[in-house]
Image (cartoon, rainbow, N blue to C red; front, side):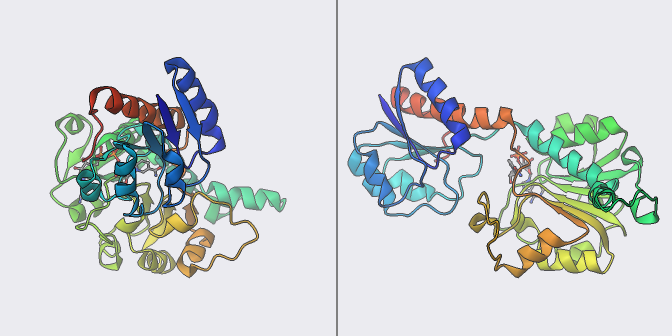
Length: 330
Ligand code: NAD
């Protein structure tokens, strides 16, 4: 059996090779993406593993069918970059890795919350200027005294809620489907508005859908408690970036921790050092004094990277050997 992996980053090479040795399977690693040109290199292989970032070219599905390839295993939870119907029409099963380490994203959420609450970036910048004085902008708040609203209480939202609860926070939540297990640690409200109105900290953990596109806009920010902090470790399109910047400037919000930006796919995960950032909103976001922006790194831990590589390879093997797998999405 021979498998081909696309968009392989250096750190994934060893993990993939260890898996291949264990299963006695030949693997070939492409650094580049899966394109109409590079797909030709998949000829003669039995399965594909990919880490697609933008939309996959529709022409690729019939090309794979022609080659006798029956699946693509995506090394992420999101599969919005695939045309699932077209894949199905061409007999291609798409799989994802739905849960690779919810704790990684949850712990990062709390890390950024604490950094914002205790003004760690500002303290560090003053110390670098040898200013060791105490002044009001550095004065923090106690996380455990805060009320937290968790929007989306699935794997990651619930893991974050548990940590906030552990600090002593009162946790409110909104989800379109209430999770009975979550009710032991949080209070469900009947709407997003009800969940956020008293919250000092609002953290988003729901997928991007047509219904929640730009749900967090100026109208919603006006309903926030004054001086609240917003955390978005879920998907950029959940909030309207332009409105967030105005809400921060006008003092409606005290700060924001943003790990996902709606037009991030051009920039993340790439190095733009010494290059011009043409997206003015993105530039304003990353330089805003009240924002901690991180480039989709909430998931990025040893555990998550290992789980992503191994789970995608396992799904590929499963489909080739049995015709299906538990993580198929079409
Ligand atoms: P999940 O499917 O376990 O939970 C999502 C929850 O959101 C579900 O309980 C669902 O009912 C709820 N939901 C859906 N639409 C909603 C809406 N309109 N309003 C309120 N709740 C809604 O997913 P998860 O594994 O917890 O992941 C949550 C999100 O985190 C993902 O969709 C993804 O966007 C994001 N994510 C980010 C990173 C990162 O590195 N920043 C990594 C992985 C996932």
